[in-house]
Length: 516
Image 1: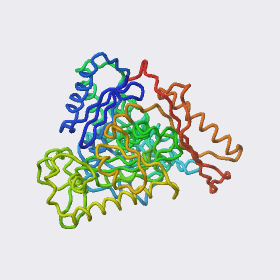
Image 2: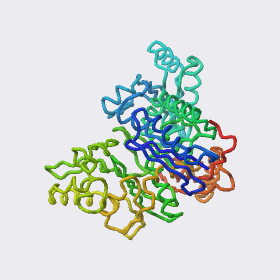
Image 3: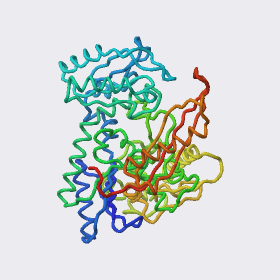
Image 4: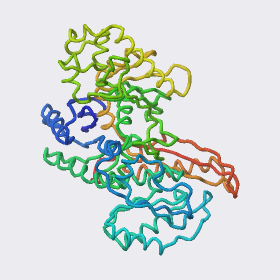
């Protein structure tokens, strides 16, 4: 059996799964310290199944995205760019002022790097790197993000800079961009800085999770879900917390696939309704479609693997402006059960509107009988239009597509969707179920020349490498399969036509002997 845990901004969900069947579940408001809510949820689930043998614990968490959006609990990080000075656009350009102040530990440009075809721009200036190291020691900066031009094609300079820094400052923590982002330097650089800034938080979060489980005598391997629906060991999360920053929507989409028995449909739209937001994404082959463009994290454009999700500031706890009829983005969040009108509070929320419209019966229906019908109609029309527009935006074609609505607020939004929808029996458990069902994965994203080979050969090598990376991540080789691939022809390289190829493989995690 697996324990699946999803820590959301409003609720913490815990489910006990036997295969894909829900044996027990618990949903409770997320506690201010987060971990106590996890402890309470696990205690309740295990108390109802005292004989359960736990094979794995899988956690999805909002710790990292909350830290970025709130610009809190972040480490000051020096940013070293390996390029050819001077630079037109400097590192951390266009970062929000508050977030930049929290993360910026100094900006440095070092001569070196490569061009887009792999040719060297210049010899790495190792003396400059040593000078930077001495300066970091004086400033007591312990975190560094290193980004080289086109380092996903040639990582030699990044690795050499890291070696020099760690030789001179053994206690230094270093993140390398070729291990994190894709080819574009600005988004990759931003993601690398955010990753390194999150590493101290990751260590404390992992320690807290470990302490909670140890206190409950749970000795099963522990994993954290990543942005693409695969599993990360605790060690991997400590090194690359950025890969777990967007796991919430992914967990819900994967859970929707299981609960609605969507299998490996070519395409299905999932609408995940929480207390604060509604996230809408596309499932392909049972996994979320990945974004092919830069993603926004706390106002910072980043370039690494993230689900392609449209997020609306609409949820069960969204506050309604009684003058304009606008719903959200402000939300009462986890205080919904005390502040909404139907629960005895004084705040008009989306939940109150849906109850007033007669779509669902929740709480005290009499409490919303005096809400003006005109206000109810205007506000729900606004929500209907925004949700359905986002669903259409998410589709790949104009034809009818399976639409699954999940999340604790699913009963509120499902009546407002114009197309036929699938709502599972336990929609509020989708996020935790998706976490529990996460798999091991591996991805290849690179540029290959076609001067002496064929496109088919390049794709086959990429598939093979992706499978090997999935196995290295802990997947059972017998279960590994390709779930996503694309290749984009490039015609501007000096050696001739090349292609950028991206392939993703997944497989069932081998639990025995998993690294913690």
